[in-house]
Image 1 (cartoon, rainbow, N blue to C red):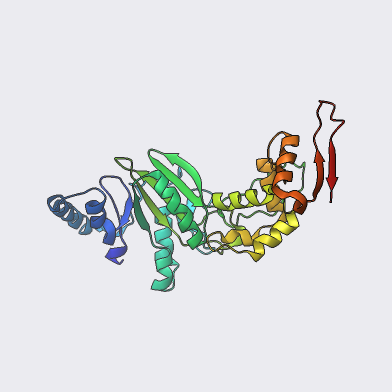
Image 2 (image 1 turned 30 degrees about the horizontal axis):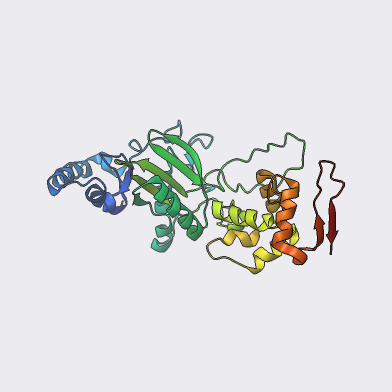
Length: 313
């Protein structure tokens, strides 16, 4: 086995690291001096000389399932390759397995590399996460949190469970595989900083931007577009497809059902400016005037509303 691809556990934060990143991590993240580095190198050398050093460590990273390594695909995190029976207890080791056993060349293997990135706060991580997801055609959804770690998985991975209870027609699921090699684990460090350990490569399905959930910015864009009252669902879709936004590629593939779902979720009424219908109408008339179809508008002077007159173009 290539020693640079071996995995070692950080003695401080218990993060799984490739050998080539191990000592740089101790220097940059935990501020180890050269004396401590040299002591760790001596310990590492003893481990390399041990017959057990050829196996991949799975004990230091917090387990994501209740199973250990086995060949039962009903348990643990199994390899999504049809002809492979390996099962692992955490996403890091699964990605390393895929990189070493199922990549045909170094270029392909690089896609499944394990990376780490340090952030000064969780907010900084969230900002980076949105950009990284767009660039890698992935949406990481929060799966669980435990002992200072937050676990994210690929949105295309998992088992679809309908919530209709037979009361409405189901829709096509965007789940493509039970397990995907793309993941992100966020570990809390002191003081307030976080370390993201992640893999961008997908296995078990093809990366498809049309199948991704909307991110916060994309959903907000559609929300504002519908709230203007200037678009029907059909014209909103035409607008999104003719005005592509590079940093929000999912918008181009918006469907009628996507827009209905957002309207239902956020209780959006097209053209509504506030909860009071009369005030909302007045605001629209002032904003749009005759261009919005308003020819004449007279508001009632009593609660009966008898004096109300609206003339449309």
